[in-house]
Length: 323
Length: 254
Image (cartoon, rainbow over all chains, first blue to last red; front, side, top):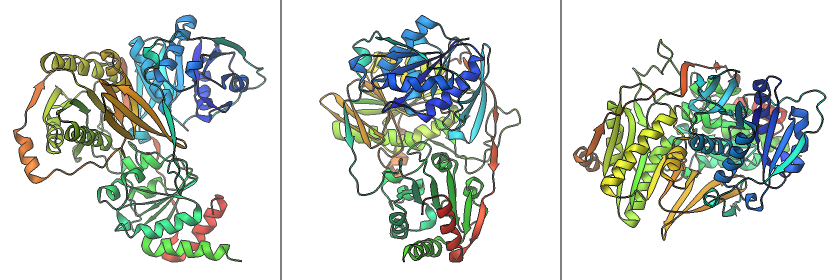
């Protein structure tokens, strides 16, 4: 069966999360044609990389009005291909844009849409496993209707290449865009010029919870963060207490982070918070309570009073760096 | 301005997920309930917009009869009235949820005028389907912008800001519109005791819609393996600092 995959790309490179989506889609296609859709400028360069992932044909949606992201216009590009190719399934990465575009497609086709799947099988209804509670719970479900619309939960399916596939056939087309498709589009991009690194992009995040004790207590976290070129984050209880601005809050329904190292200082580890930081490659928990839920989600832990431990780590780092 | 905020009652899950015996739901006998944090932000956004521009805030929820408690909580932080679409407790799929919300909005608008702004959380904290707001917008023929971390209204236009890599993307859409918000767009206020008392007197209209067959059909819930992973203990107290720095070196971040 044919499976259509919406591929996100930037600077002529395919996004890693789209390669992961492609890997699940290839399994779903079970030998049938795997077809990609790339929207906007840079699609042609990116499409060249898709042969190694089993894509037979890459369709490029080209129109100068697609230079700025417009969810309705992307959905129209998907719908044009759905009408033409009649795929059994349409798959996207479970990113903000992937979920948004497929939701528009689902609304316009009046079909169900399963967001953030970790597995999908053949058949109708399509059996899927999807994440709930930001990944703390799984749901086995059936998607009724064709095409089956589904997105792939980030970092749950490792991207795998196939053997010996050549470059895909490239076909450009102009989606039939309406005025309404372009009403909601990125009108302006405001660059954030800040002194530090942003939470969402930092390699290291030093985050504090109730255990930090006060707004002043974050001083020692700031100091450690500055040594590591890290961003400072916090849990909900901290913003509610007014110790940190609400923009610093890490959580499932707010800012999700994916640093190489997440240092959770005095954070007990409520589900909401864990879902916001579980994208971190490594989690180090510093907590007085060895039974705190955060420990069950961390890779490393130091047990004890963070007001002693954090300054000790800072001092040790300074010592290690001094000649 | 007439603003509608749609919210959902969800359990306060704490650290560990425990399922009911039939694997259809979380075991909630010992849990409290709330609306999701970003939906609280949605209510706060609506209340502060009405404080600036005048108007009325309505809060709508689809959920069990007990969800009236969550609607009253939003009335205590400044919403004016509530609409409860009461279920028998069974879960509704996103298509059915959107359809019944649309039917309610259309009836409300026929009686009381257009909602200039309809606010949702970006996704429900429990089911995480990411689509109800978009489906409602589509059915009503309104523009929709998702995942907002900033919102302002001027001259009948909504300036909507999303946080993206390297900064913020800005969308400008005409009202009436639908938006979905993230936590961090504002800091929700706490209700005062008099406000809580006043909330008891505010109107909550209840109806009981019929649940259609789900098309995103839940078969069962599963607690993922990997919960209960044990962290490697690097030590206790400040003496653990050298071990921590060693790990940072191995990870290439020190």
